[in-house]
Length: 376
Picture (cartoon, rainbow, N blue to C red):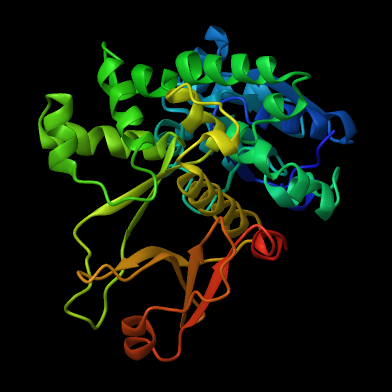
């Protein structure tokens, strides 16, 4: 059993507040909720957003009906809450009208659930984002040596809980294929009424082959046969649905810095490989550098979420092809990270970077030192 970074939830669950846990499907939100309910002393009511009656009650804005629904309970827990229309108003009534009431909701699509709870619950909620298993969470089961030994598996198959527990390689491939084909776009298709998912899948496949490279929106639009506006909308939906993560270019002082394009990474390497059906061993691949960069960007995203570390993030490149994979800006300082699968002690920070940002730091992250970068 893996312990998640947000556990125990007691420290985050407050009276007359809503605790929202968002994240991709099948990353363990329901399991984490059930684990908490098994040990809590609070009298709780567990429900699902898939329940039609629950949808009717909590979207009704009928005070009498909603308050009767939670009468006698100290905690309301709703799984898949994004399926309840206007749930934010229903939850606002509960936390405003029932003294001491605690509420937990989970949702698989941040854009839909956050959009519904955001304004009504201003000042009344705490939002947590849950991702596939982080290296810091796996440290509760494996030691540092074992994590390094399993590094190739993480790069190829990712870190979805089900994948990590699958008994065979074929079982891992089946799970990832199912997630990629049946679950990955489910929320987007339902939310945006997109009838044909082929364009979305084709877009993801194009992004999968461009991990670590700057992406041209115009080029994507041309290859997909759609307009630029549609591509931008799809990219935004994919990011809000926890499928991809965008980095924009950093620029402050130097005219040569490139800022008009973005890079896109997948939140899980296994999903990326599943979309293009590539599960070969590392020594049989020509994309190991891209896999390593994607893995590091995703793991660092989890660090910033779970620690937490509040930072602005970018990549950096000049027209002379000097570049740094990840820039973090926090505490009034810039930190540059270059990701190299092959350890090379001769790698130095780009001259334009050190000359322009004299107070910045720079570090090369490789398989021998990566755990210090992604563990607390």
